Length: 111
Image (tube, rainbow, N blue to C red; front, side):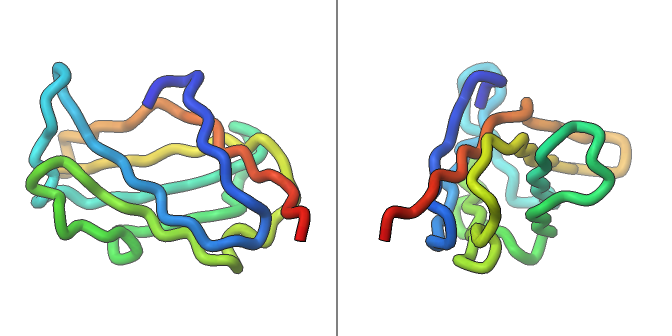
């Protein structure tokens, strides 16, 4: 994902984000990696409004570079806003691949 990528979700509605991890335009086997995910209003915020750790990720297709981040209706029961989101992928203590920050756009639900 690039810094201009926007992912839209609805306020209070569960959503699973599907991400394909690539390196040089080729899917990267991430089956031995660990993951974390954070969503903040501002870069400088000390505490994320949404935070996920390795055990929260769905990694059944990780060998093909595909990971999924389930966001519950409780996770997304937050104020509509354009949040900053980031996924961190760690292969070893000395090897971290970090996606670029993207925008998680929480839209107001009409119903």
